[in-house]
Length: 307
Image: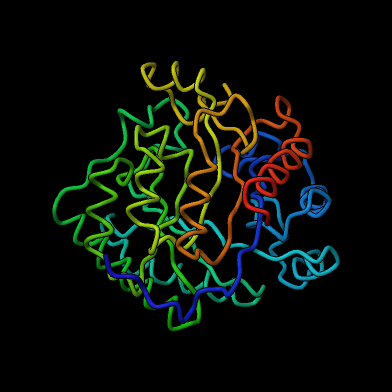
């Protein structure tokens, strides 16, 4: 496999955490009462270098910059939902990607994480993310690959790195789809966002994906999966909302997690991964205290990697 150029790769590893442990962007009512100031305060208190933006973060750029600077935090990336496969979605998506790149550069970020959300069902409370998701046809795959190459080149030209996120409920979910996308995109422009939890939920072996694409992983979402919940959610064809509410995802270091993250982290370090390792557990904060979970995950990463 061709290893992409490291021209835009950050020169060290940073440990971040997503605000999804405090509130949820797909379903804002989960934890919506949590102010962004608390999320940032607890992110710093738990020992992280930053996280992505959440739905309730300031849209006024100077306010966000001030909130980050006073806590010495950075932005890992933003979540960018593309619509390359939708009718007429190509140009609109490229404009949106450019807007997000402009924003990310303003806050000093180097990564942009994207997922193709045309036809996706992850935000639909009554649809199964495994049974009701879109299946792309040939022309849609062509549009997606061409769009990602164009967006990735735009990111690279702006000194950034684009990573694609396979996600439950979307048209890129299972291993053959991941392989098809990676084979059909330019490794100079399109990296892989490794999300250990979404892979496991989809029936994909996270370790196998890590081993295959270690030289092309640009961004990492570290989450675990509660095996007891997955054992119900998969045959029960749960919606994303139902799975989250039942607690399918959890943080690294949780003994209920079914994914062994230690060998995955070892492969990443052995292949000189550089960039953000980001804890992400889409949880209901009423059932999983965010600060305690954040601290547990940070201690686990420190113990396993020394970082």
